[in-house]
Image (cartoon, rainbow, N blue to C red):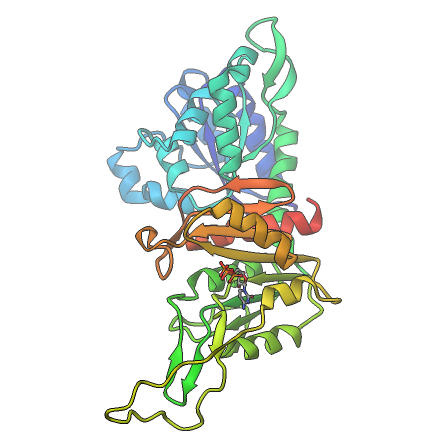
Length: 403
Ligand code: CTP
């Protein structure tokens, strides 16, 4: 069966379309999925927890402050212990709460706490769907990576008004669930990816080097996220103190020139994501022996030479990967500099971020990025580096497979 073993958390919010959740539960279970329902207070005005519980063969969760439920699973586990969260029907009110991060009842708290994909099936009066506030909320939710099915055009149940607002039919929702669970499986299966990460160390002599503050967290997280989507990933990392992520082939290098060789030796590949903070310069001729200080003499000058630009080399290579992604670490004019880098380096996408010291991004665990590409500029909210990685991997999969 198509959904065998899949765990669906079904959130039912208020609306006449709530009666369709009976059929939805039945269709999901027929295909082998288990369904755990949450109902909002408004939903219980339309259908009863008793009926929903009987059809789903599950306890129905309704209250954020229920002592038994919180001890039993708790809203955080409810949010996580599933493969997909489906909101059907999704009312205008619940969408507004989601868009603004409200968490004043069980449904909204779980939606805020979940790290699973979320599919919503909006259902509301056409005027409510067309209202500017709902338009804004829908845009926000889409930008946040929430998946939509519907609403559809047609007759409304409660009036003879027609327009866009009718909830998708249960079988349409099931098809979207199957696509998503399949899609979340392995959209990058059979694709190869090269990811660079971390700083480079450019030796001055056998004991000294020039380095930068990169921790490798973002690059490592991206390598792991691409691997989770099924890509065969080679992570080429400069010296870092974090462990190699599981599921990737890790290659450790020190200098920019070594990193370039490692990257080129892995071409051809489908995807290249150059995240490393490669040192722009190396010491022109690093000393073979430790440079000794000589009392009374002026300190030795450091003659620098330019390092190869790995991203630019890959972006213009005759075995160029189909999708080349670079990063732009900026402290000012982020968009302008990002666009210029897209051009100059021959990349398809630049992930630009502000690394001014006050942002705490370099070496920190969070990131706030803008995605610059021929499609325009997309600004992502402040996210953990793992979330940035997850979204970027999804975006790469979409751009590569045209999905
Ligand atoms: N990069 C690279 N090789 C280099 C320098 C940079 O592959 N020698 C890559 C980085 O991995 C990143 C992108 O190029 O994907 C942008 O690097 P950044 O240091 O921000 O830009 P620069 O080209 O060095 O430009 P500037 O110093 O003027 O900001």
